[in-house]
Amino acid sequence: MEQDKNKMITQELRSAVKTIKAAILQSQARAIQMVNQEQLSLYYGIGRYVSEHSRKSYWGTGAIGTISKQLKSELPGLKGFSEENIKLMRRFYETWKDIETDSVVGTTEITNINTQGRSANSVVETTDLQKADSEAESIRQLRLTSDESFPITAFLNISFTHHVAIFRYAKEYDERKYYIQIAYQNRMKADDLESAIKNRVYDHRNALPNNFFKTIPDRQLALRTIQTFKDSYLLDYINVEDIDESDPINVDERVIESKIVMNIKNFIMTFGKSFTYKGHQVHYDKLGHDHWIDLLFYNRELQALVVVELKKGQFKPSYLGQLAAYLRILDDDEKLPNENPSVGIILCKKADRAYVEYVLQDYVKPMGVATYKNMQERLRELLPPEEEMKRLISREEQIDDE
Image (cartoon, rainbow, N blue to C red):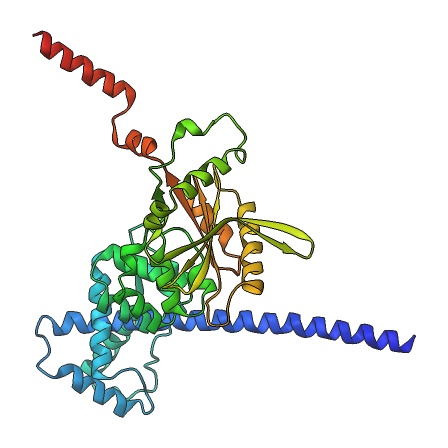
């Protein structure tokens, strides 16, 4: 009885440790977040102050270097305020100044410098101190943007080092917004972010919705995986007459699959030359349960097996669970020691990108969702609507009659 009681106490204590530990970690994360926001606000404000005074020749040559040395002299141990860093703060401000409004991001309460007890031998000195206090308060404010699409949460929660990489290597406004968002969402290191910018990941921003950054630890491999797949594929060898839209969704997926298999060379060329076809309806028996993989490939550049699951209709979250099971089996039973984890792609007719990205978050296997079109659908997209076609034809006939 006593032993059971001690065991229960131990379990309760373990639970208490987990709860307190979680609270500590959450508190630490919030503290770091506030420190980062305060630092960004400070750096942005200093950048504004320095820009306004140095760009208009109010200060002489070498002023920023002199300020840096004096700051270090008066604040021993101060780091991050070298001449180069102050110039980066100026550039940080100048990168974003055109989207400022009069609103201010709420950071920590600004505490004015207490002038009491200071030696103020003249009205001029007191006025200068009050002016410095006022300007110091202005510096420690970060003005909001009026652009509703601007990722302000992400902006405030990535480090200054991340921001430096963005304004150094990304030149366009929308491109910079994109990198701010992916750096925050994927918790990218600054070096990885810089690499992503230099590798023009922005040019592949319309890649299929995926969780590759989250599930592939090697950032370079994650980038290559993103660049390997597109968000939509044109399968011009699939004939819509072969697909009865009135049938249940899963009935005719074999029709699509058979068309792909019959044209496997074209399909591989659609996906990329680095793909090698390994089979369709590949069977695996796991713990007495049958699994049939629609299409299985190997990609030489990724050094990974690639599963393509075909779905005739709209994307469903359940497809990801099925795909995750296939990837687990392949990694356990098929993947060689020198190969990277298997990658899975759902290929379906329609998918809501935002919804797909949302439900992908909790999966630990590398997966993405792409859509496909056949040639008839593509032509329908390019041609005017039927009523417009009739109107144009009628107009042409009238012209001919005249």
